[in-house]
Image 1: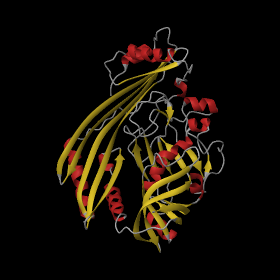
Image 2: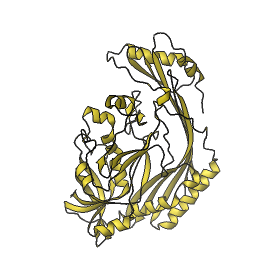
Image 3: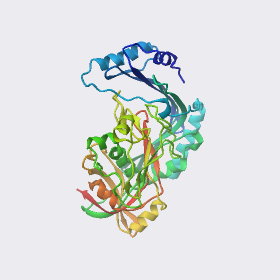
Amino acid sequence: MFELVDYERLLQNLPSEIKEAEVNAELHTKFSVGVSEGKVISTEASSLTEIFVRASGESTGYAYTQSLEEPARDVILRGYENGSCSNTGKRDIINTRDRAYSGNGPEDSSNENMETLRDTAVALENEILRSESDVAKATVKISAATVGMHVLNSKGVKVSYSYPVYEAETVVMAQRGRKEYNASCLTTSTAIDGLDKGFIVNRIKESLENQYDIRSFQSGYYSAVLSSRVVVNIMTTLWQLFSGVKYMEGSSALCGRLGEKIGADVLNISDTPVHPKTGYIYPFDCEGSRGKDQKLVSGGRLEGLMHNLKTSWELGVEATGNAGRRALLSGAVSTDILVIPKNIYIEPGEKNLDELLQNMEEGIYITDSYDIFHSINIGSGDFNIPCRGVMIKKGRKEYAVTALNICGNILDLFNNIEEIGKDINLEPIIMLKSYCIGGPSIRLKKLQVNGK
């Protein structure tokens, strides 16, 4: 971990024109080994330091740097000057020590060597090749990373946390007859031996099987099961419904519905700093607020929202540790404070996927979906999502269908949930893994599915 001594010293003795200031620093280091046909095909190493500053006089300004060599005074003054020349008059709230995260995390880091990463990748590749005879090529990349977070401000907040995380990223190409098929899987853990090889192999195998034997499809309303992959894809955009910012702006389909039923009794949605299905940990947010376990939806009822300091103050509730700067899949650097999840997920049920399909008896199993960022309207809740699936008859998979769209409104989908599976997975989102999205498979009473 790096030191922020100069920033800390300056925050205790700010220039007279600056009334308060805050520094949020993040460190991401990563090295990885890629393997195919039992041989190393790539090695990568990267390190990124990001420092976000906000400084207030009459209004708040922001500054950003990736250089630890740039003088702390210059960065903070640049933030102040950016605010002083702004005509918005906006003044941000910064945390106080009594409201902030109260402990420092372990100064830990990943220490696996390249040989361990290579051996893990080779072992996983071999398991995939043994499990599926149609696989012509598999590429496995195992990564070891360290994530470090710091928040300091002029009101005495000083918190830090550093932890290791491991990733297994798998891409395969299978061939059946003259046709090629592709499948992929990403999973993470806090330990290299915690990477679930069985989960990866099964997901790859099922993904390939769901693409074979494609036939025609007739549009209509069907009983349906959404795979956990599809649920995660939908939630990747849908989490914005629970943003305190969207709620205040009136741009969420849930506006004005706190405390009301929005879905079936079996629907529960949570956001938490730590979850056993992912290696990513969020003990506090970029304002230093403690990350809290919270139920957003309980028994189908909207119970809570995600907040940063500003939205919690304006709505008269406690901050939930959801301040962030990367709302969606964007490489752009945002210095303003947004609201983002930590580990947000639909809570699992007790049935496995086969049981959901058997209970449906006849309908469609939606296996994969696409274009998730342009196919859901957060303000209205309407969606039109490109996808593919498998037809189910007598509880068994019959044949694949493709070039489909599932359509409707998300509140109708929530209310049509009949059963929720136990096959939950959480996937990291955003280039720097600022949050994770999770969900299990879900059985629906009915769903509009259109095909060509």
